[in-house]
Structures are given as C-alpha cells and as structure tokens.
Image 1: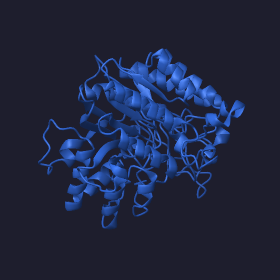
Image 2: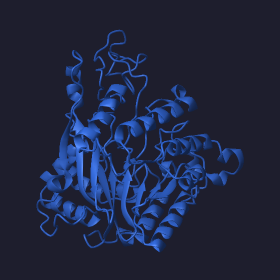
Image 3: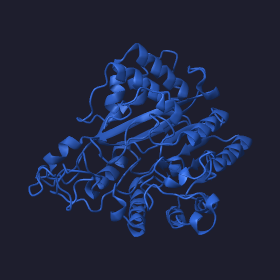
Image 4: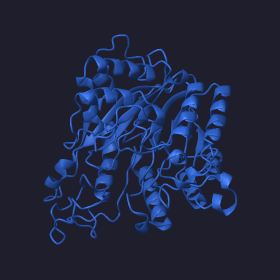
Length: 444
C-alpha cells in the first residue's frame, strides 16, 4: 500500500470541487460559487479530496477478503509512506501528525493480519511537512525532528513489526532501518525526504550528495547483506527517477550508482510511492550507457495510492514473491471507481467495491516469448516490455490507463506521449527523467 492520506476532517456534502486543495472540508468553497456547493462531497470520497475514514476502512476490509488472507494474513506488507492529509502547514501540528500515525498503524495491524508491516516515512508524515534535518547540522538543529522518528519507531515496536535493533536504527537514521527476516530477506527503509526537492535542508552544502548520511547508511547495510549472501528489498517514499520533478539530481545519481554496484545479486526489488500513480523505473548497468535487456539491473515499483487525490481511483497491489530469491513472480492490482461513489450516498447497505484491475504478467508479457511463467518480473523483463511497447503503442496506452488506476479522468496517451512514457520507465534517476520529453509524467 501507499499514500493513504487519511483525512479526519473530511466533511460529507461539503464542496468537492473547491478552489485549491484539498477539498471536502467545511471551510473550503469554489470561488465561482462561494455560497452554494457545486459538487457535494460523497461519503466515500472524491477526485479532489483525501481519503475519508469510510473509504480507508473499505480498503482495509477489502484487502484480506479479495486476496484470500483473512485467516493467515500476509507474509509481510510494505507501506511506502504518506499517512497524513495534504494540509498547509498552518493546519498541521505535531499532535495531528502523531495522531494520524498512531491510528493508521493500529488499523493496519488490526485489519491486515499477522504479518509485519514495513513502513517508510512520506514527505507528509512530518511537521513541518517534507522537512527533515541532517545530523551533520549538529546540536539541537539536527535533532528538531527526532520526536517523529522516536514516535514512529516506538509505534513499530508496539505493533511488533520491528525487533529492538531495527527500532534503534530508526531512531538514529531519520526513521530509516534495516530488518532481517527469518526467511533471509533484508528490508531497508529510507527517509527519502533526504533527496526530496521540497526539503529545504537539502539545499545546505549541495556539493555533498549525501549530507544526511542516509546513502552511507544504505551502502553499509547493502555491503553487510552482500557479505552474508542475503537479498534486499529497499523501500522509500519519494521516487528516485521517473520524470525527475520530485528528487534532487545529485543524491539520486549517487543512489543510481549504489543500485548498480549491488544489483542484481543483492538488491531484489525497490519500492516507492509519492506520485499516487502506478509507475515503475528501470536501473541499468554502467550509468545506463547502454539501455538493453542485458544491462537492466534493478526495478523500482511505484505503488498506486489509496487516496484518490487528484483525479485518480483508489487502489492497492499484492505481490507473489519467490521465497528463495525474493523476486516478484506476479503482481495483482485492485482499484475502486471513485466516479461511482456519489451513487452510494442514498443507501447504507453497500460501500465502495474494489475490483481486480490487472495482472502484470498477463497484461504486458504476451509477446515476450523468451520468458516462462517461472521467470521473475524483474528489470530484464520490464525492459523487454518497453521494447514491446515500442513495437505496439497500444501497450503504452494500456500502461497510461493503469497509471491512473483506470480513472475516468485519465486522458489517453498518443503520439509523442508514447515515446515519453517509454523513456520515463527507463529512468531510474532524476537526471535521466529530466532528459525525457516533458509534460507526460503524470496523468493527473
């Protein structure tokens, strides 16, 4: 799951088409009609609004039922950040952030079953939002956000998701940690605010691509995994590539080199969120000097969001994982049609329906004859998918539809958009993403 963005202040029947964002609040309106509501907010959510509790609960109830995990739960769950709603700083506080983090992690524990949830902080999971100070500042300035790292680490301990050693790492490394599972997989969580453009602290000493030390923490943990012969999943929030509009270039270029060094033998998969859209990024060897199936090294899955904001459907994904290699063998995505939510307001018998959207292998792999059902959906496979897209642009149109979780608001991708999408999929760092044709990164 990713980008829940629960809104405790969501107000049914308030303006869902407001001037500004988020909508569906008692204190917002449309400047074209300040005294009369143009689009009343449905009980379960709207395209310009964050997740009401009714939709959040519907999603958490649907996941076990639709995936057949009611009795045993998942082996584990990853959550790639952003629990808190899209509020201006003047409407946020430490207490508000801590409240949201507490209730949602508790709901995850209660609703998703016995397996641990490995979570990463999102840019909204802080106050002030998107701000995290590097330890290199020293003194009180460096510790000004430690209240949040301590809080979430203690919550993860309370829910019995992390052992004591990982909890201590999270308190020291901006809520980043490494946990080694009993099955041998290591999960490394990063606080990607440390490369996010909106974190003002990242503009201190920009000649150093790792002022925070986060990437040194990552390399230390990857080297330890390599020495032990373990595989690793990396989770974070702000993606390192795609269109390059979210991260800074220097740290994501360094991250790209790190991924190159430790792929594919150590890094099995990378997971991000943030955009609310269904996307992915391929990492290639030798700084992508040659982009081919032979040089494709690692893949970052960018997960769909639960929140509909903006102009998206609500969704989640379930992975089938090889228990020996920890490669992804199948990926299944569900979505709920936000445009249908107004029809649910006049009754209480039914809530939102999450329907099966697509199977990744079946959707994109029909022409990849060299791949068997026993081969993983790894970076090599995804590069072959991009080659299939070059031969058949309709695959890009399908990708574009799923990027918005089949929202009725998603515009089609044709002409120059086709080549742009393929370029974006092949972009694992901000530098590569910024070299793609602009204007096609988002379907919002």
